[in-house]
Image (cartoon, rainbow, N blue to C red; front, side, top):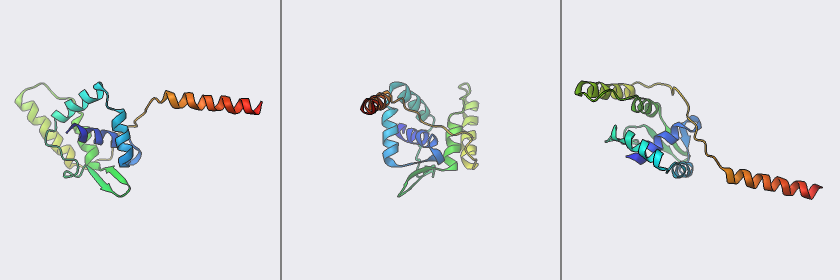
Length: 136
């Protein structure tokens, strides 16, 4: 289940909610750190029977995968703070998740995955230095 939550989160951070399978794999690999794993595990506990394709949260085609409006609504509902642990409050949360999934909303925010690639910057600077040395 954690992988499915990660897929939803990565797609939500892409322009138009769309990414190729290669891009998804790259992003998920970059996110495989203990903090991310713990966060996704906590979220997946709130949706134990998640099926992103069966629920039509994600659509697949030859160009890649795309997050649907229902997927955005599901993520928004999933990330809502959980009330105190009484049975009535848990039931109210379950109802709000179902209602959010049923309502087709436009995405409220666009998340963008940002990676810190220091090595690429160093290589670019070194390449610039070499080019400057050739010109001089």
